[in-house]
Length: 485
Ligand code: SF4
Image (cartoon, rainbow, N blue to C red; front, side, top):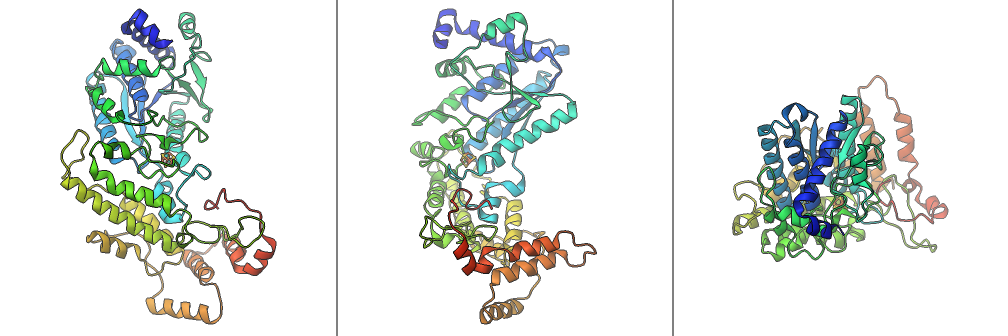
């Protein structure tokens, strides 16, 4: 219906109505705006229309703050990430030149909640639909926390502007005529009580969106034909919208999803590019497929949960359920990830320059030092007292590991070997003993040790300490939160 609307009345008319509405909503109150920009077609058009509408206002009327936010999961497809960074930079320059009170920013998840710190650090199994631990932590939470921060700062609610669309128009024109904004044009945010959602392109169809994009250059000067080429040859045109709801379908169904996404059965983020001769991405696709393949392999996983509990698959109690990736499995994956990084950078150097190519002068990191330090600390806490992460790093990359800030292991190699042989001799669970020693080390020198008894109790209550009893009493757990426990 909307496409006819455009054909019948002309694109300009529809766009003028949207500009009028945007200006009305913007001038209606002093609540700051937050625009979710994923780099996909819908959020690009939304950002374009908002910037255009606001830039038409006289200077004294365009002082209300607008934040344009893009979430970088830290496992974005590197080509898409590059594309978004270029746009963010241009948007900021354009807003400055046009004296619009706007800033475009990239948000990232907390370092302790990135894909790698959870998977390689804590051992979370590669995400899948039943255990999708990534979207909320990596996409929704950074945005929600930002909105909460500005709500506090401005002491008011915020308007979240999204590029969501629906075929149904909800008497919006009437709302504009009535100057009725709250409850009509703005809707309650699904997860954040302090926010309202405004969707300026809600009434547009897919074709409308492309028609608008391809008949204009973005105000900040980016050629939208480049955006079209991002979508070209994709078997599915869906994009990764700014996620509001953890129950929404997986955001990995698109070119704008994470390159490591194992939630979807077939990768969409890398394959399209590879089909279009971006062969440098092949090492990434190989590793992503490997992550899917090994997910349920026992040699990569513990046979008890993170909290030490054990469970069985089915009633027979003869098949132990799997827990997180074991420290051994994590080390193996870390090595494989670094090998992928090395191969990826080699492939970039050998590749031909194309539209979205990455600079041959910059080294592309697939994992940051900060993440590696968190992973390293976690491994040490779980008994990797040889501190193997820097060694693996140096072996694979042939570069020195940087000066880390993690506490070095507190026991010499000889003492460690002695401890291991004593555990074996006395049939004591080595992991448990190491956990107790690590706990003591964490509290050493402290006058007050709040919570230490509860922590000791937690370690000693693990099923794996009393495995025979646990086997008798346990059973019937399902696998849904196999690692997150
Ligand atoms: S794209 Fe995949 S890995 Fe990334 S947040 Fe979405 S579901 Fe998780």
